[in-house]
Length: 205
Image (cartoon, rainbow, N blue to C red; front, side, top):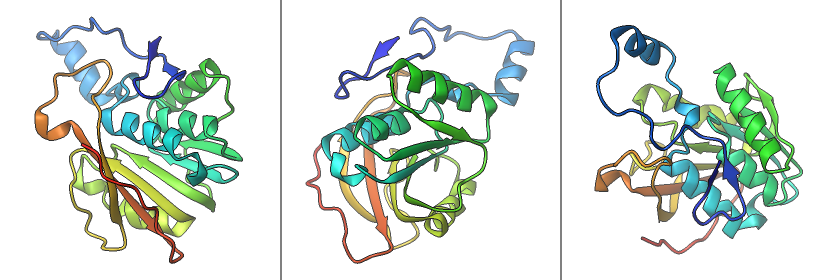
């Protein structure tokens, strides 16, 4: 179990920090490519979004929240800890849904899991899901299913939809540490709302 920097007392069950970095057996490599265990890491943008929610619990307190592309469930767990009325972790990977459930239990919070996006929620969270440009349509999909959307990503510095405004930047590293390049150490936090009220937060490096 790993404690999360800036998110005390949250902790997650993740891959061991001494996981092998060298060449893999071809059969193992094919298995990794076919079913990557991305849910076994707490990606930097997910950690940054969790920190942001715990610092600004009013964003989710009393609201219905969906963590889209939940992976380890770090954002979902943070939302539940911050006082959300209900939290759902949505991921198409059954192993990710299991990881989200186990990490919720580890932190004594309730998080439902699903493979399909609920019809409506107050706010959708998205962290580290835009690494592939083919996932950009998720931005519009989230808008169809929620009144607000919060996006955290270290590989995207500008979103194609001008309705998403960057509200802050947070430095956070993936756990266990993957030795990321400096350009990927800063998570950009974007906010979209159906209403006129935008979240205001001072950028911090």
